[in-house]
Image (cartoon, rainbow, N blue to C red):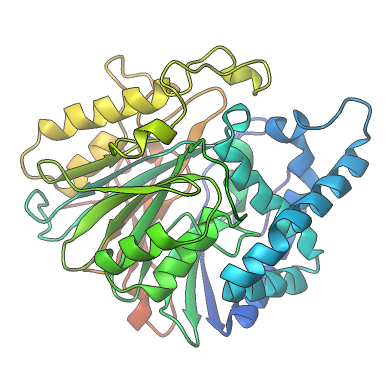
Length: 418
């Protein structure tokens, strides 16, 4: 059974996570040193995740019936190390050093960290889909704040929610980042750097086979550390060595934004339409559509029970269309409008697997965040935005203590004011 963690998790009924405070992990120094600090501070959560990972249904589906769980976990760790060690070391040496630090600080074998990375790469396989997400970017012309806005609902199995962390990374040799990740990971899913560059990562499902095994969370982290604006990030991400698919929303402090669609070997770029960028989980760039899972593909008995018989792109297409509809009804978009769209439960008003604020049998919105690149501001909540208070991190790159502003919200979870 899962129990309370030092990361501030509280639990609702049964195994369902309840409300949780967003704590900032302040990490400084060389990458190994930052990793060591992360591992030390999140040690309990990392061990807790490692001890319970075999309970994840997608993981269980890969285990041969007659193989004991402990034996299978050991085999899976060895395979993950064998597939990724050399590629991660070659193409992401700083993040590899961070992983070594995390393992040392958490007092856990580094092979377990590679096993968690292997789960990310499985998401490029139709039968082992582990996540989703909805993201949107609002350009300066449509924004009531006078600067771009980026918002993301991170949809994932509830199992992983207790292990999320928000960290301020201030490395010695690259740009500082403020990002949201999972306790054992060196990379991140979403973040903003000291230049105001934002990147938000939605899962994509490219069908081409990879030539290297580098998870995209590491590529996102590297881009945040090494790029200052959208143009640089587009070039960096498109050329980056990677495995799997991604739909990345990139925005900078000058107001430039784009979506970069990636498979293991190919990429496409698209810009805003009428001042809005929307990303879900299917490719929309003309040059990338042919590498996507076919629109008429269905999940089979090899997938988790809740998804069997469901059309793969059903939720993605419905969430995209709904976001497009809701944004088209608002000329100038403020923070409350933004949250209103991302708290949406569809025409029925009841959240489900196909709504932007997701309440599905397997996937739920487990984290929501807003990034303001010009203000260098990140607002985060762990859970559905429809019932949340966001913690506001306002330009922590200039704050000595790295502390967040007081959490803000109203009954609907929307930040106060535009």
